[in-house]
Structure formats: C-alpha cells, structure tokens
Length: 332
Image 1 (cartoon, rainbow, N blue to C red):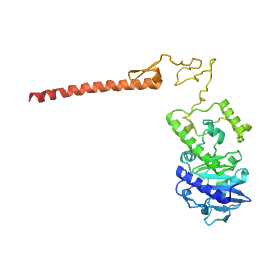
Image 2 (image 1 turned 135 degrees about the vertical axis):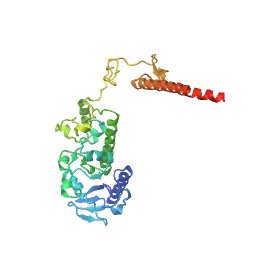
Image 3 (image 1 turned 90 degrees about the vertical axis):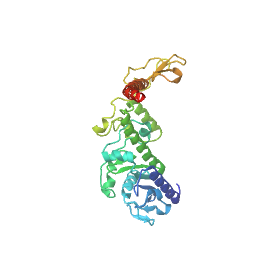
Image 4 (image 1 turned 90 degrees about the horizontal axis):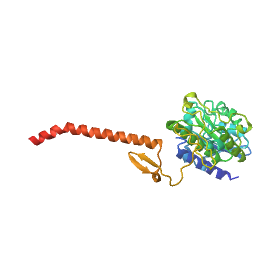
C-alpha cells in the first residue's frame, strides 16, 4: 500500500478533479480512505475540495473521533464509516453533488437500468436512499439497505451521490460514470424515446461482469435484470421495446428490425459496392458515392423546396407592389 502521505496527495488530487468537473461547489463534498488498524483519512470541513493540501487531511478512528490533523474533519464522516464497516473490502469513499445525477436525487427518481453497457458492468443498479439531515447517524444509516444489496454507487435524496470501491480512483470513476449516464438519459429524452438493452443481452453483460470478478445481485437471481426504475412521469419518455438486435442472414449481413417506423429490412440483402443508387436532396440528384436517400434527407428536401417556393412568391409580391411607385418616379 502507498504511504499515508501519498494517499493524502491522492485525496487532494481527487478533490481538485471533482471541483474542476463541477461535481462540488464552494466547500461541498468529502473523500475518505481506509488506512487499516482502525484509522481513516478524510477531508476537512469548511474547505474547498479544489484547494486541498496534504497537511489539511484529517485522521479519524472507527467511531469518527479525530485522532490526527490540525483541521476539523468533515461533518459527514459517519456516512463514510457506515460503508467501511458494512463492506470490509472497500477502502475508498467519495461523496459529491454531480449535477445531472443530483437532479435525479432531487426529483426523487431512481436511475433506470439496462441502457448503457458500461453502467451495467461497473456500477449496476443505482438506488435512491431516503432523505435525512446530513451529518448525523440517521443520515449515515439511510444507505445501509442498499449497501447490503451490494450497491457501489448510491443517490442521496435531495442531496447528491456517494460512491465506493477498493481504490480512490475507482470510487471517483463511479461518480464520473454516474453523472455522464444521467446526462445522457436527460438528453436522450429530448431526442426521442429511450430504449433498453434486451434482457438476453443484459445477461451477456452480467456474465462478462462475473468474469471480471465484479459482484451484482442479479447474478444471484435476487431481482429482475431489466426493471425500469423511476416515476411514471419520467418513464413516459421510455420505450417499452428493447433496442433492435443485429441479426445476420445466410450471407452474414443483417439490417436490424426496422428503422423510423418503416417495415423491417431484416433479411434484405445489403447494398453491394458500385450499385446504382441516388438520392434527391434539396432538388438535386446526389450520386451513391455521396450518400444514400433517407427519411431525414427526404424531409429536408421537402422543407428546402417549400422555402424556395415561399421565397419566389414573396419576391413576386414585392415586385408587384413596388412597380407603380417606380413608374411614377420615372414620370417626374
């Protein structure tokens, strides 16, 4: 294991990364690390995580009593200790307020599952802990039910998120993955319906996860691998159909199971190189080498044609209105 001084420097580095990412503002957030023999390093209270120095890092015991460091320890150390006591294999805990993830926590919406492979493998289910006043024992114990279900990343209602793992960097990466995932979910709902990965494909991811030595309650059959969590209002933007899976025909090609509400192209041959294909975009014929026709191209062509017609009519109206005045000027 690295020296205590090296761990303190790692904590300072993570604090700076959290601050620069916008996961914490002002003096928000806290970080801790298990040193062994009932000693834990943690960040101080009332200090920006973007400007920590190793001298500021505190040392506490199993009960949260400060036994080292000149700066007072974080007021939320009990939350970290709850994780360390419940999960002996865990050495690092990181708590922050990543904005996209915290938006789910404030809305009281659990993050849905079975959408991104990286989330399924490295995080799994992301539960939402009940709200309690930060800093106290009751607040710390809100995460206990979720720790016992092997969650490594937990949303804290109306507060933020906490992540844990064997190393500081792994715990921090869970926060990065979580916030990027939540941002993708929010953006996806604006683009269209969000579709889950099919259950057979999720089971493939779980087998991969198991081969990497990563635990997941779904590997033990404790829960449905593809339950969409969250409120009905939020899930209104989710599709009830899984994403179309690639299926190959006899020649090894395949076209999925349908695009843009059109009939499925599954089983149809793939276009061969050099085939004669054209598309009409904005009234112009585009050869195959420059791209094929699509629903988007056709729609844009119609819009461009409509705009051209409107402009032509507008020009004629302006010309007719201005014609008498022009003739009058010549008469004078």
